[in-house]
Image (tube, rainbow, N blue to C red; front, side, top):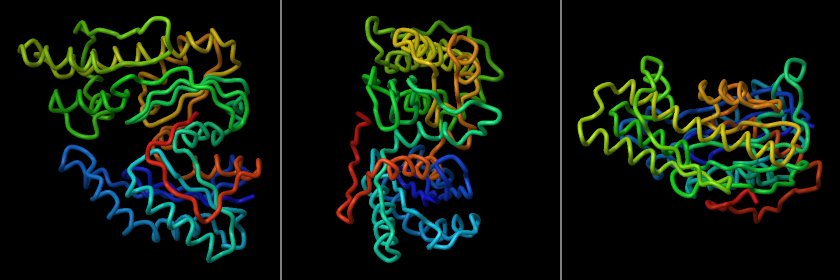
Length: 329
């Protein structure tokens, strides 16, 4: 079964065709990073207008790359939330329009669930396919969630961020240090030339699997305000170390406690090399991580998730609507 995936939750307009939930036939992404960089962050109205301009060309490119006709498709999967309302509406309305015109079923996909399914798109001759039960750490610009996944579509949330998500914290730290936007790649790049010499706190929130990164961000801000940061590279390295330390420690603890067979890493922050290497090194449990291009927002992960939703009979009607604050569970 070939699924067309559409992703417009934030500032990437993406379309992809995936076969049987794990074979990428095409994966096209139109990024808005350069547009929003001039503002130092995402402007929702600008993002939604850009999606309108990009959505038809990007779908056409995905279909052409996949060498697929509309009759080849078994359905359309589209991100319905969480995300920016205006951006989500562009994708969902396009998906419903195509579904109506071509007589195809459509299913709405949770963006966070989509990130998890990027792990099904790895080369399983090199890396093993995900094995249930598993713990998944989802780290992106707006989310830092730890979940147990017992089977397809069955999730138990162990912990969430209580304030800033890891991606938000990286963006704010980069702004404090004058490193530019987007913050995650900027912090990682600067950290390569720095040392972890600054003492920054970790919010362990003992007894829970929750996260909190507001405190470490504020601690960095106070050091800068007092003139105690002489090297932005050292500050970036120290900040990255504090965030990654917390993510890895709590993930390994949760996976060990729940006796799962595997740990999955997902979301945009999962492309951070320090996080990837530290988690693999410290975990006694096998770790599966998608390629970096599949960690950031893309439509292949949405199509992969949609395939399993269709297999479970979870098609939606043309009354499908967006849910900007949609939760995973």
